[in-house]
Length: 101
Length: 232
Image (tube, rainbow over all chains, first blue to last red; front, side):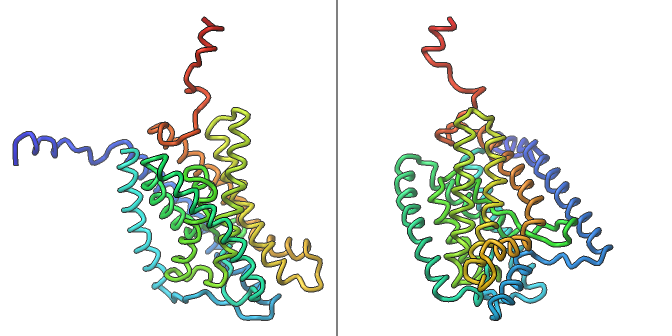
């Protein structure tokens, strides 16, 4: 590797203002979620989704059983969301760099 | 707003598919046109598409009501890629959410796209246009668009359910019953969506104003020849 190339790599900012701000915002949102979840847990709230609440209400009104197209039990849902979010992050990052980089 | 399979009768979900198809067709034409006009439109489409996918599956807890709900992302998408194009990406998003994430159903994609990708997007976009027409700051117009688009999405979902299931109960009463299931949790999230929409659009504008055609901040608007003549 040429000297100029390696010098360029050494100077790549790994904690630039964009990364710093994104981390600050992410931590802020995660702390807000943690506090909300803790509050709901302390007050024995279900913390279920409103989509589920309204679907159950509508099922009752329709006298029919509603169901999602696919059921993801337990940690499978967390896994599916994590995989989706990881690749979404890569695609957004890739295009963001092209557009705003 | 992810209505599941088995709730809407076939007559209703087929009708919602038909209504949605009209907007999706207009969206495909809009995409074809804008791809030719703007070389950056394709990466925008990809980025916004996946962003809507994740935003509309992102359940956030609201401690006041003790339940969780998600924003939509479609008002932002409508401003960036266009209101009709949003109905196309929203359709794709809802399909993948139903198939891979257990969110919503296949028969209800038409109804769900109508609420999130059409009403949510167009109402947000109209607010954006209205506020920008009256020279409102970019962040304010975007924020209002995010809030209105989010609330309108859930109002429409509740209406879709009520229209099919109200039976002998007055339609408006049943509509409000369903909306009461969404509303209290959704209002704080609509505020969050407003802040998010305003922040993202402002960041995009600050970095590359040229990529957002038709969006010009009044403070940064170029000086016209007439202004030079009159103001010296």
